Length: 279
Image 1 (cartoon, one colour):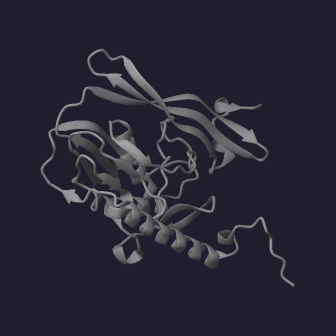
Image 2: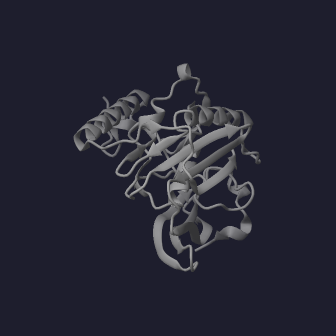
Image 3: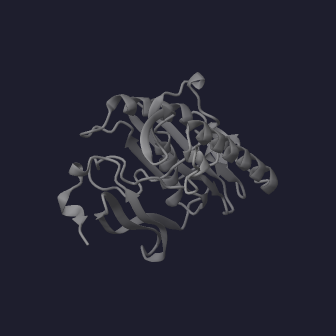
């Protein structure tokens, strides 16, 4: 006799049930987009818009104790492929950026490789793994701009030990085709352009605009530490977006964008001892 565990979600019964649940969520997203009739950004141009709003460069290969280098190089390849679908995109006033509308469904056939993914709160290898790093880079560009983030999902902010010191939101954006998307809307009166490209092991990213902006934007993190809850460790912090006047340097707005409570996914022995607080 088989007894049904009423607390068990359908997607957690077995891998087939999980796959069915994912397909259901994908279909639901397609239907939602048809109903909402969003005006998605789809136009590209090679010529760069005049002003740099925000930019960053990051090493795609994390070299730290306990990190598998093979999956890191696969991640870099996955990011490079996705960049080719996004580089040069122009987001006009009123348009919405959708990560998955542009990147499309990933597969081995398209050249994507196995990298680290989080599935059911566990780190495993999966095709396209590491592409969340690209979504996170885009998120950091957008946070440093007046563009409005309309969909943002987080996974653990403690996937691996900090390589060169703490950088807030360095790995906090989660995407999974297509129901876990990253989206933002251009609510301004001018166009913006997304530039994304890879050189060697480095990902380069820039957000450009037609006209100069009157503000700059920054990320502030407060009360950062690690704590133990029952048998698990978590990274805790509050992360804010600060809007600053270019002329005076004064902060004109401070908005909480993430009340961070992330499960540590790496060896607990690698957590800096001076950053652990016990209740």
